[in-house]
Length: 161
Image 1 (cartoon, helix red, strand yellow):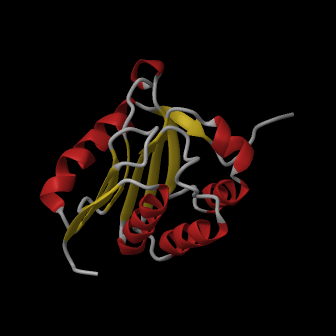
Image 2 (cartoon, helix red, strand yellow):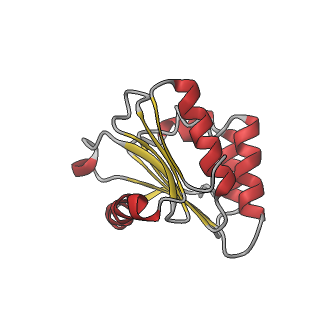
């Protein structure tokens, strides 16, 4: 694969390959904005192992996720919840406020230079960007804005009596 790449995709399989490519090149930070993580399949064994290896790779690594809906992760993502519990110091999940839940795109960014962009969360049409810092810049800025607006979402610990 070339060092720098921009490639369009329009199938679920191509989207999954693009996500794997971006996760594999991440060295410091992964930022995710998605409806509920269902289509990203972060709880699949191979993908959860990739995320675990990323998080274990250094103290300076971080994974930040902003979601519209948290139910899927809470109910159907035991591997991801285990990673959140183990790496809570560098892994956070937040939820968009009600006023932003109409946003329909989705993206995964790595280190501010690579990303997978889906133009609409209901479709597998989008683009893969590898080592495209100029193209990824606006998406990274968008993520930072969403992160600031988002509210704390899922905690790895449960408080109770």
